[in-house]
Image (cartoon, rainbow, N blue to C red):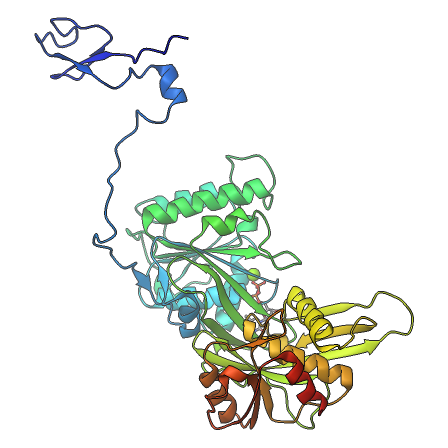
Length: 481
Ligand code: TYD
Ligand code: MG
């Protein structure tokens, strides 16, 4: 077969016009002897459509060592929130915050927005869920009634962007004259907002797309337009996202890919405490948490959460073991509770975990069966982390195992004991990070003994520390063998 001949083209060095044949005079500008053969193939409409290797603008390529400006951050004035997101809201970034209904997302964002506005930044809070009056009443109840915040109840992304984009804003309308404080009589504001809160993305509607609000395509299209606005204008955008029953943010998973930061607001409505955790952060780490307590005046910050999730510890009960978790740089002590119920019939026993990964629970049970000869196969197993706390720290394995063994044998673990360490499938115990810090905090809170992997024993931190090489040794200890 004949190989295709590379297409030739001739480009006028003066005016840039291209022609397939050489000529002495450029047909476009009339210059003589200006056509020079160009090696690149002719860009025909066909080839342009089918080949991305030409026809674009050249982009600038830079080295890693080129100047990099640190992102501009706006502190929210809520230290626990700033801590969770790595130091403040990043201008031009998009953040998604998810959490169960009623957990306090709107409250937290209203408090943060008011603080940012009070510091002189332009802040817009768009509520698609509640009427403006409802938000205003809440703000007043939280003592934020005079914050110069711009509030709107809207769901049309086109309306919102039209409002935000203009170089001046319509004057604030306040129904109760004078009550809206500093912003109440503010005429046009000729600057782009520093912070835009959209509560929630599932209520937003883009007329570019068919479908009801909350559908996958609507959520994606609305988020895309809002995020594009944030990137172009330099505003920090915060989107509230509903979560589904299993904890994922409803709507497309792709929403999590579109934003720079994903936060989850956790806790149980029946408990007072709330934890703000970053699960994705392009501008910082994901290991620090923010801790809040929900009260009559909204969310209060909890600067020292280490003893927060410990229940009153009286008599030692079987199945309860305290685990010193580490959240970023802060230790948080939590009680792990296990319950096993022997089944008489041959029914399949249930396994349930609240506040811990159920896959990890299955793994610990398997290791206890396979390496330590304990049988859970005819027992229902329930595991609970007290106080509505969710443990993500892998060091919890050892405390969970101790709780399970203690529950199965109905033998309490000695009181004032903490346990931590990672369990390998082989049954060996692995040391974990910051053992010294965990021990020190436990000692501070009055704990006296610690069950840890053998490798940790060096770090005493003022405690009676028992080190174990294998899970089998720990089981023997708990069973008093
Ligand atoms: P909200 O912020 O509306 O939750 P979300 O936006 O995540 O759905 O919080 C609502 C709950 O918080 C509600 O059940 C009442 C409670 N709450 C308080 O206990 N104290 C307060 O000061 C506020 C504003 C709310
Ligand atoms: Mg809400």
